[in-house]
View 1 (cartoon, rainbow, N blue to C red):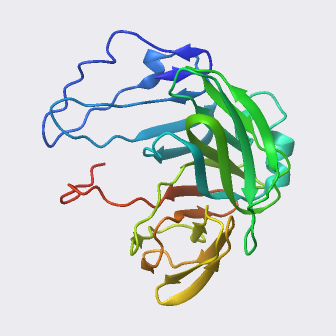
View 2 (cartoon, rainbow, N blue to C red; view 1 turned 90 degrees about the horizontal axis):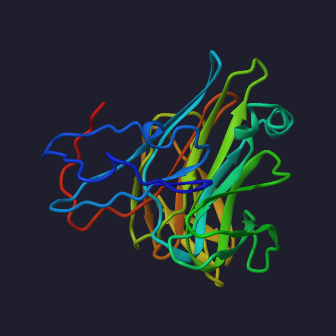
View 3 (spheres, rainbow, N blue to C red; view 1 turned 135 degrees about the vertical axis):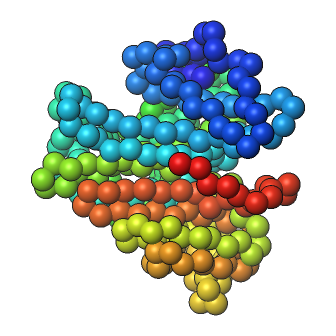
Length: 288
C-alpha cells in the first residue's frame, strides 16, 4: 500500500488467509491512519482472488458520498481513462477551495511501480474529433513509491476521456464529484481501462443517465457497432453513447479500443471501466 508520503509496511498486511468461497474485509485506515491518498497492490499465493476497494467520505456529520472500485489497467507508459463525468462543475470548483472540501476537485491519481520517477502528462481527448495532437492540461513529475494526485483544472460540465502519458510505466485512475444545490454530494473513481476484445458485451446497472464512452488511442478512425448501430470514433478521440439502465450492450469491431460506463445526476455519480473477463473466469457470485 502506498500513500502520498510513501510506502506503508505494517503488521497485518501479509499472510491474509481467504478460504474458498469467503471474503475478507480489511480497514485500510488502520494500516495508514491520516493518509489522504491511497493506492493498493494486491497479490495472492496459492489461488486466485478478486479485490475491490470501498471508500466513503464523512465531513463531521455530513455524508460526502461512497464508491466501490476494482483494479485498473496494468502498468504502461500510456493509460486511458474512458469516462470522467463532470456535473455541476461550477459549484464543485467553488466548494473545493474551502477547508475539508478539497477532495471534490477532479484529479488523476498516478502511481509509479518502478524504480525511476515518472514525468507525466494528462490530455483530454475530444468527443467526435481527433485528439492525436491534444495539448496536455497537466504536467508533473511523480516520485517513486508515492501517490500523486494531479488536479484537473477548468473542466466544464461534460463527459471526458483522459490520456495519461509517461516516460515510465504507471498506473492511473481519475476521480470526479458532484454537488447539488441543496449540498448533497457524491464522488466516483474511474480506473484506466484495458484494451477491449473484438466483441465485448457490457451489462449496464441501474443508475442515473448511463453513458457508454468509447476511446480510440490509435491514429485511424474506427467504426464500432453498438447494438448494431455504427459509431465513429476518431483517431485519438472518443465517442459518448447513451445507453439504457439495466440493458446488455453488445459491441463489435472494438478490438484495442478502451471503454467505460458512467452515471450521474445532480447528487449521484458512478463509473466503471469495461474489462474483458478473465480467461479462467467461472460463475460470478455477488456478495453484500
